[in-house]
Length: 240
Image 1 (cartoon, helix red, strand yellow):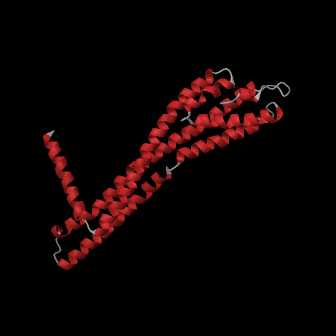
Image 2 (tube, one colour):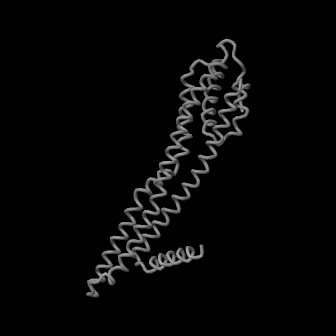
């Protein structure tokens, strides 16, 4: 354990020394890569918390929805599951339900309710996707930024080699090792961003599919609960 700690300290110290010895261009590249990495990790952690909570609340909300006998029962408990995107879909359905009940006293256009739920579902998915493209940008751009720093460092190293006139590996190796630091930093920023992007997009697609399924179940309940045209229930019974 003591030996591994010493080794880690040595390796870390070597890397710090290499970073400190890099030129102004390489340092600028490393600062840019650090900014990309910090922001991408902020997006990753934020989305991980949001999606985890949304998944948990969606499961609870679906159980409560399927146990409910009346539409009013679902509406009355929906607020406690607000992190779930399904609640937003429910809001869209209830808003259109109220409009139709207020004008004709009954449900005369179920397709409009379905469209309202589709719009609400799209808004919820858009909310989940906010800032996620940044991860794709980070994964695509940072390796090339790191490569730019490496190429610049190698040019600088060979230029110094030509000026010194000593064509030996010992003369050129320090400059090349310093230059390669930027490539390593670019990959360190890109790899977590690419992995997280694919995982987050997969989760968002799962939520989109779940929203569509819930919208169909919700439409079935609305059609079952809606009164005949001439025997409408008061609008006030379906409210938050």
